[in-house]
Each structure stands twice: as structure tokens, then as C-alpha cells.
Image 1 (cartoon, rainbow, N blue to C red):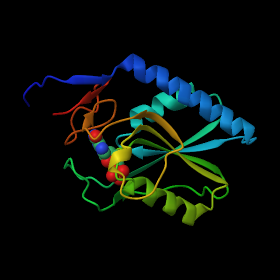
Image 2: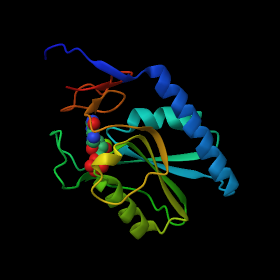
Image 3: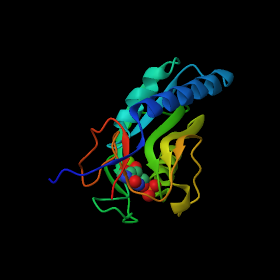
Amino acid sequence: MKPRKLKVLYSKNQIQKRTKILAGKIDNDYKKKKSKMLVVVSVLKGAFIFTADLIREMKMPVQLEFVRISSYGSAKVSSGKIDAPLLLLPNLTGKDILIVEDIVDSGRTISFLKEYIRGQFKPKNLKVACLLNKQTRREVDVKPDYVGFEVKDQFLIGYGLDSAEQYRNLPYLAISD
Ligand code: IMP
Ligand code: MG
């Protein structure tokens, strides 16, 4: 693969700072709700780095679960279809659940997952945290409860986000051309 010049959008340091703030907000909100434990459902593959950093900044007890779903394929434009190669969760009936996603784009992935979790488990509480929110591209009506950064309609890579399965390991977020 040809080396590319990448334009950094958010540095490792900026992401770290913002993640800490979000973790503090989440801790506070669930403390107010007198929640004893939060189930974090991380959406693979993209959210794995953000999830790892976010939960390590949180003080409340966490149960970590993973699902693997997306609406993308390897193209840069949403395929419109949901692909759910791994949707295995233990019984989470009545729990406080927080979905953690890398980026909310059309909103289809999150909308699908929220509906699925609601239908399966009737959670006490179901919220969404995402590192990035591309509000301008929304096609279904979903609103993430915790957002790291609002971003423009640009294709981003790094810090878990890929372009055709590459660049997930960049420690920062960059704009892909
Ligand atoms: P949605 O279902 O359209 O909201 O798509 C969300 C998924 O699309 C995310 O979990 C990402 O995997 C992927 N995605 C959307 N925008 C980008 C981007 O700019 N870079 C990398 N992946 C993206
Ligand atoms: Mg994803």
C-alpha cells in the first residue's frame, strides 16, 4: 500500500481529554440514577479502541459485551443494509445498557441495535455513546446521548476507524482523502 499524507483531525491527546470528560459525565449520570452496574455493549470492530479507553476512565462497575454489526461493507458509502455477523449477548434483562459506537453516520446501525436490545431484554435504561457524530448524514432518527466530537461529512480513519480494514491502529483521527 502506498504511504499517504494524512491530515490529523483530532490528536491522541485531544481524544484522551475528551474521553475523560465523557467518562466523567457517564459516571455522574448513572450515579444519579443510583445504578450499580452498567453493561457496555461495544460495536466491533470500530469501537474497540474508544471503548477500551472510555471504560478505563470510568469509575462505576462495568460489564463489557461485544457485538459485531455494521451497515457499511468496505465501501465508503453506507450500503443501507445491516450486516450482523456477531450478535450474541447474554441475558441482559432489566439492566442499564450503554451502547458504545465509533461513529454514528446514517444512524442505521445504532437504530437497529437499539431496537434489537429493547426487544430482547427490555433494559431498564438504554443509551448510546459515540466518539464521533456525523449529524448531517443522518437517515434515521437516532440521537446519541454522549458524543465525543461532532464531525462534518468527511471520511475519517484511525483510532479504531478503518478504510477497507486499514488504519485502525493509528493513534489519532485523520481525514482520509
Ligand atoms: P451508520 O449505520 O450509517 O450510522 O454507520 C455507522 C458505521 O459506519 C460506523 O460504525 C462505522 O463503522 C462506519 N463509518 C461511518 N462513517 C465512517 C467514517 O468516516 N470512517 C470510517 N467508518 C465510518
Ligand atoms: Mg462501526
